[in-house]
Every structure is written in C-alpha cells, then in structure tokens.
Image 1: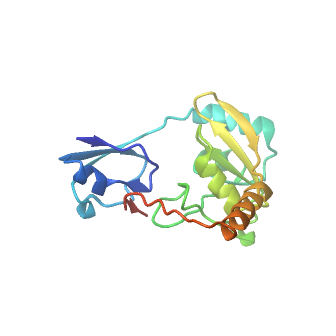
Image 2 (image 1 turned 90 degrees about the vertical axis):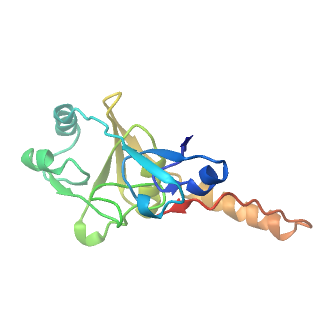
Image 3 (image 1 turned 120 degrees about the vertical axis):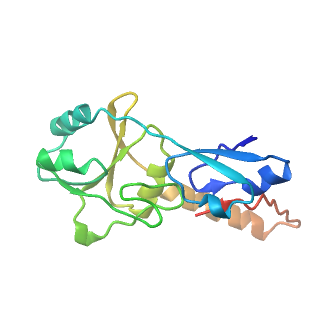
Length: 185
C-alpha cells in the first residue's frame, strides 16, 4: 500500500506501482485524476474542512463594508449579509476551488475588489495572487478563526529567476534532475 503526500494535482501512481504497491490511498479535496487512468488501484479519501460560517460572516461584517465584491465559495450566506460575491472557476476544478497550478484569472468585468481564501495554508492562495497581481487578498484560517491580509512579493521571484538564468548562462556543466512522471491536471 502507498500513501502520497503531494498536492491535489499530483498522483504518483507510477512510482507506487514501481515500488510494488497494490493500492494508492490519496487524501485530497478533489478527484482531478480519474481512478480509471491510474496505473494501480487508487482510493480517494476526500478531505472535508469544516468552517464556522457564522463566525466567518461576522468577521467579514466587522472588517468589510457591505456592497464590496468578494471572490469566494461561501456565497449564499455572504449575499444574505449584503455582499456581492463572485465564485470563479478554472476547469477541471469545481467553483471556488483552487490548487497551486490551476487558479482562475479574474476579469476586470467581474469588478472584484478582493479575494477571500478559506484555508490554513498559503500555497494555493499564492497561485491566485500570482494570477491576479493587483487584487487585494485575504485569508481566513478556519482553525485559528483569524482573518489576515496577505501579500505576495512579485518582484523577488522574478529577480531570483533572472539571477539563476544568468548563472546558468556561464556554467560549464549542466545537470538534469528528472522526477517520476506523476499524473497532473
């Protein structure tokens, strides 16, 4: 039996099969790779994160003025509280869901003033901030019940990539690291 600990988009069934595993157990919030195409039997265990929606709405009511457009998934309760809510979608994900390599680019037509991310981690939110660099981003952590303003420093990664390319241009030797070809969405 194998247990993989990558993000929602990676299913390393080929390595699990090469290791002689009979079953891959996959913990995820979505089934992006159909079990019918994996190279070994795969069992998805769907993760459900419970959110105190009433506390979230009360927190937003305290920190945001009604009428503001917010992109997120808890739309019906926020609409009832007077907010304009946009729930973006990037196929093959469900509405409001983002992963690190697949996040929606919000159009100016939607007039979204900020995005609200409902999770404890940062990885997927960073993807959304990279795709929408001018949008304000907030994260509500359902575990700590804290709302924080998040910022992604766009210049630093671009400078780091430029530095790496300049170093590589003058290198005498190159190495290639190749991982296993896991399925990705």
